[in-house]
Image (tube, rainbow, N blue to C red; front, side):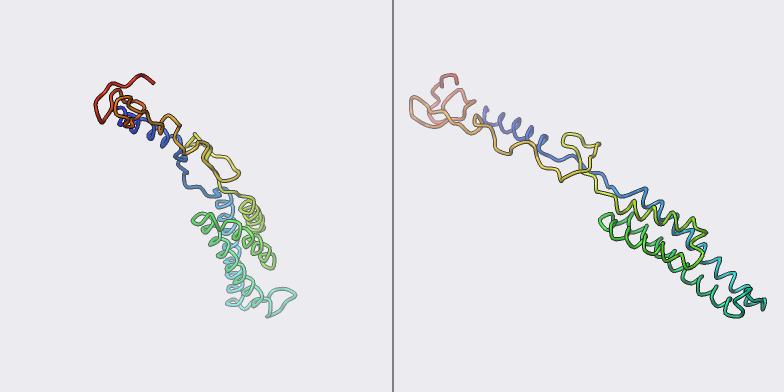
Length: 201
């Protein structure tokens, strides 16, 4: 009976103390939202350039100082702006769905946001938001749970158990029956072999 009590209490207590706190799914939320919004503005800027170039071409108008090439230039800038915006939006979604790639996509978002300078830059709003979102993604670190608290997180080195897995000496030490010499568990009151009463510990 004593042995069964030891198995029910001690391992359960150790399991509760040794189990790491549950780690809720986490990702750089602010970087994701800011980058996504910046990408949307960049897409809108590219679409505006495309629409303007197409309108000028259909109306037979020319861009002052650029002549016929101005319409082609606007269309080209619109394509570049649209492509850059879509890449930034995709990078933001990757930051959300694959947080482990946040740093890589942070670099790409910053780079493509700077590329948007050749066009409308998403009315400058897209450029600024893209730069901020990319920098936030670069600065993000995965959260690490605090030992003993399943809902609080800290940023630092990986979690390591603070409790030793080795059972206490009293859990493995044995007692000897004075009558037959058989070993008995510490909590036993009688010898499991001959039934002789054992002295107290």
